[in-house]
Amino acid sequence: MFQDYANEIIENISNSYGEKFFNAITLSFYRAIKADFIFISRLTLNEEKAKTLVFLNHGKLDKNFEYEIQNTPCAKASTGKESCLCIPSNAQSLFPKDDYLTTMDVDAYIGTPLYDSSNKIIGLVVALYCQPIDKKDLTESLFKLFSGRISAEIERQEYAQSLEALNHHLEDRVTERTLELNNALNELQVTQKQLIESEKIASLGSMVAGVAHEINTPLGVSITSSSYIKSETDSLREKLDNKSITEDYMISCLGNIDEAFILLQSSLTRTRELVKNFKRITTNDTNEVEEINIKSLYSEIIENFRSGLDPDIKIKSEIPDISIKTNPSAHFYILMNLMQNSIQHGFTFDSTKNTISIKASEKEGVITVKYKDNGYGIAPECIKKIFDPFYTTNRINGRSGLGMTILHNQITQSLQGKVKIGDCDQGFQLIYQFPVENNNEHRIY
Image (cartoon, rainbow, N blue to C red; front, top):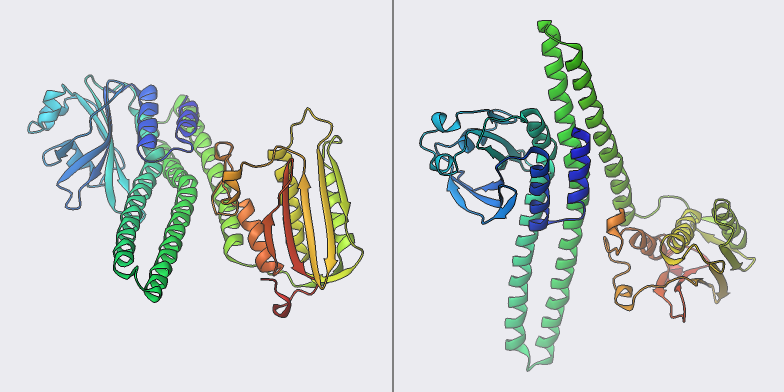
């Protein structure tokens, strides 16, 4: 049951951010634990108050509010002395000065602290019950498992807000400078340069936010899964030491550990793949340049790809029979990425006319390759963003939006060439060029 709820929550929060994320995860918690009130709150800098980011009142979203945490269970939970503070009943008598408990007729409380990337407590996820708790273990387990993901989203949202404020500030400064200097050509050029730099800063900020979000999601689940596994093993060890363990408890505990381990393993694998792709964006391929026959190289790549291909998909190639000095692994990645994109995004599999065409020619020491398929093609508004990091129209199916960015870097850095999207009546066409001899003297600009 725990695994089912965990999987449902992961599915519900996938590809959601900010307010949408907090609403989705809180509603998912409600479906699992049926608490009367559930909220996620952010502590103030002095930790005297907290403000809810989402507040669920008997299964329905309600207005957020700010409250003082002194003399409340939240004050105790925010100390971090317990990984999850649970008051199974009589919460009002234990905290008589907490007016909210009385007003809301709360009898039981469960609260888990939220830690930021520097291990500082920044908030709480809380469930309140009007009756004694009947799903204590499930509530604690879900809160512990997803507390890291919630913390990561709080940090990401606040970073995005600060970035937006910075961008607004930069835009205001550019507007001021433009008004002051629009009568002089030299001053106008200064303003234009500032605009360009502002755009670069905004793009860099977006990329950093994307990296943080993409990695924090599986990493947050990994951290909380490992913490949950440790908690379960500690509990199991304690019962073994006390000789109070039962067969049912051992089976239940081992089952929970297995489920958490599956989540941990999946999340770490996802993190490893993301880090590998991020590294490709920022570094060139370390493989040495080799002298190879381009026709033989491309034929080998195409044949390797064709071996696992649907026989209804045709690949046509026209490659010159010449030797060049280049980076073979870069060509492998470029062609494989393009052909996989055609299969995954371009073709409909009820057609017998799916065709990929790869034509290359050499002129004045420059190789020009035209890659084309007769699939769906891409929308005009997507073309100008196609090489941007993290840009994808298929994130719902797990695409991170890094493939074409890596391809662009492989062509411009590893092959010292250039690339553009070509015009065609049907399908998709990409044209890239690179020198016959791969060295700085022959770089194409």
